[in-house]
Each structure stands twice: as C-alpha cells, then as structure tokens.
Image (cartoon, rainbow over all chains, first blue to last red; front, top):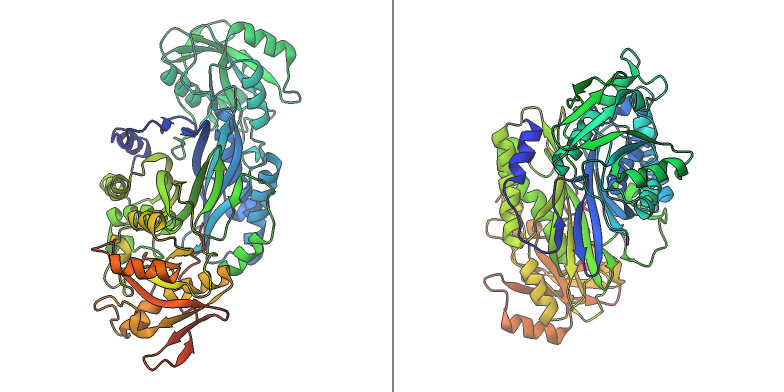
Length: 307
Length: 307
C-alpha cells in the first residue's frame, strides 16, 4: 500500500458533520469540543523495525518513544497533556523484565509531562513489538495552533538543532517541547506550528501547503546538530533526516524579534531560519542568496500523517 | 510474559493523583471529567492470528471488529460513542484494495453507531496486521455503570444468546449493544454491567470480584446460541467460549421483573440467568438445584483487561 495515497483516500471519504469536531484529521492533533473545553487528541504507533530497533534500543526506550512521539504532537498544537491510553502487542520472547522496562520508559516521560495512563490493553502474539498510544490534551486560553495560519512576511523559527537524530539516538531520548510550546503560545503569538518528525524539508512543506504560502530558508541559518551528518553534510542531515521532534513555527516579525532577543526557552535555543513568502513551495537560499527549491526529502520510512 | 500478572503489576504502580480521573484502569472504560461532562474512554487492539485470522476473515471484518470491540466496551458503561482514533500496522502484502476494505468495514460500524474517526496513523511493516482503536464516549444524565455496583439479591440478566461466537463468525459480525445499554440505563437502573468478551464464567467473576458479592446461575436458564457447541455441549460453550459481546448486568429484582415483562430490547432478548448472593464466587446450579463452583474457564487467548 502507498500509505500517503491511502490516507488521502480516507480523507476524501467525508466522514462526519458534527459541530463538536472542530479540527479533524490532517494536523498534528484533532481538536474536539467538550462542553466549554477544547481537547487535542493524537494517536501514533511504534513498530519494531520501523520506529525502534528493539534488539538494539531495548524496551525502556521503545516505551518512552511511544509516549514521547505523541506528546510532541500535543506540543505542536500548544496543548497541555491530560492523559494517555495505549495498546501493546508483545512478541513471544518478551520477558516480564522486558515488559516492566517498557512500562518504566513510558512512565518516566508520563511523570515528567504530567500525562498518566488511564487505560490500556496488553496482549502477546507471534508478531514483533507494536505499541500504539493515544494522548488527549487540553487547549488553554491562548488557543491551539494549526499548521495553516502562517502569513507572508511571518518569520520562521525552530527550537534546538536538527539532523542526525538516529545516529545520535536523539530520536529515542528527545524531550517533547510541551513547556516551550505553551510559553511560545502565551507570549509570542505563533501563527502556525508543527513538530519536526519527517524532517524540515517535508514539514515546512506541510506548513506552506496548509497555510497557502511559500517560504524562504537561509541555508546558513539552519541550526545543524553537532556531528549530525555522519557521511552526509550536516545541512543535508538537518533538512532531511527527520525525527528531531523540535518545533517549527511561524510568527509575526516583531514577535520574532522579541522572541530572539528574549531567548526565553534557554537552554533550548530558538533560531530564525527564514520567512514565509507569498506563494510557491519552500525555497533554500545559499550563502550568496541564490535560491533552490527545497523539496520534501524528509525521511519517509512510514507515513507520519498524524493524528 | 504473563499478561494478567503484568497488568496487576502495572495497576500497583499507582500512577496519579488527579481529580479529573474519576475511574482509572480496571473497568470496561476509564471515566474522565471534562468541564461539566463525563467521558468514557477505552482502547483495544486487533492482532492477526489472535483476534482475527486475516487470511480467512478478510480485511473488511478485521476493520469492523477493531471498531466494534471497543464500542462494546463503551456500551458496557452505558455511554454514547462520540469519536474514535486508530493506528494500523499493515503487512507488506496488504494491497490498496485490502486497505480500503479494512476502512469500509470500520466505517460501516462507525456510521451505524455515530462514531467518526477523528485521527489515525497508518504504517507498513514486516509484521502481521495490527489495528489499535481508541474510542471516547459521553456519559448521559443516567450516569455510567461500573462492574462494582451489584448487591446481594440483585437479578443477573444477559442480552442475546451465548456461545460459539468463533464457530458462527458472530465474533466478527456482532452489533455492539450501545442502544440496548442506553435504554437499560435510562429505564431499569442496572447496578453493574460488563460486556461478555472473556466468556460468562470469567466475566461474571469480574462483576463478583469488583462488587464484593457472590452469584448463583441457573444452568437451565442460560440462553445457549443455536448450534453453539460444535463438539462441546452448548451450555459449556455458552459459559466459556467468550467473544459474545452481549451485556451481562445486575439490577434490582423489581426492575428485573419489569424488564422481563417489557422485553424492551426486542428483537434482542433479555434473559434472567440467576442472582447475586452475599459472598463466594459464582456458583452454577444444575436443574436439581445442586451447586458447583463456576470457575473462570473463559477463553483467555489474550488478556481482555480493558481499557
């Protein structure tokens, strides 16, 4: 199956006409109205051999990543995590100690982020390890942030540094940017936001498509992770590797000036990497200002179309 | 891993201290407070080779069952389904047509029950088909019904007929008893309820344990499905086969008299199969009134401890 085509087909099936579904599939979370509250809901899976390598990474980090990936989607909406639930399909060789380690990895990040597990299902089977997590968050007074609100002239910023997340095991050990997203939303009015799971080149395309704008990125401004590249150059790694789980967001130029002067997320850095333009897809400007199309070369080992 | 022991261990880890978590793991759904509303949340998975046989049953019925099983847990709380989300891990051989059939099976029951999919994640891998579904429901004015409210003297009733769900393919084709549960909750004050997934002998044990009571079942009163038994006798099949997805519930004797006279769920029958007693586990009374312990011989191919 071509996952992306299948997902497009699903979205064309036009499933509902309901006022409580404020935002359906296609952003990092769905938004649901529940009485006077708005909820942000996301679901994602960790499959052995795709998102983790159980034999090498171990069950602790598999459990942690299953939870952390979903929390990153909650961050991308600037929501606060409320609770999680999960199903786990355990391979026959999974020991009691393996199961407990998986729980402990999941629990460590649950506790850190205030997102308890309120239910789940555990089963054994002949297949590899599969963990599916659903997280529900709460939208605060500042509201939620979609991919679709960026305007021409908005600055484009990222948190942290990008590239090489698999080589450095950051794809397992990252901290979801929940606190950072909430602070950004409260003080700096981001107009669009996404978490960098597919890679900057792909995820920036998602913001441009959803917002109906273009983007210019200064190659020299992209914050490349130390030693990110391995055999490839650090910029290519930063643009395409994916699984950084940092935030990419747009905001007004004055808000951006203030944010960059404040650097309120320290020790997490915020870097301005470019700006939104009127139209066309993302463009990369080399140090001499020469443009080249920035095509989605994100690492599409599977479809990250969440939720 | 021994799933049940692992789940007991998890529950002993004492995860939270939060007022919005009204009911945590251990019943058919968790209950969450969201503003002035109560939500019922459940999650469950369908694994090829455990809950379905993809090659024989086909993707349509796998998709439908993934959704229907969770809806049955929503029914067990007497909640109304609101929305669902899902992750799907597709085997390499899964064709586009397979994927669409899976969607259509899921969608058929979503539409019937008013429970649209608000998000999901689809990926391919080298493992077998795994579908994980989370459903959120709404608790109405009549409140939710736990496993723990049964009182000595309460009548015990079941909907439909039991046994042989796998031989007859009812485990794929059942209709979750949402409408029936809502009607029971509105008019007949059930004190405890569960959906029959593990089999009457096991699930009745869950009610007795949660409620701190015993139970007497009249063997001659148990509604056995036509031809349920195959090679085993129909009563044994009705007690132990599991995956009936009917409702087992307790209610006051006068409410039960009224319910049995009304038969308001027709064409779905309601049968009184026994009553709750002071203590001890479930007991089966043969036609001469001789008691025998009714031990959990439900079909534990995996742990159905939902949510």
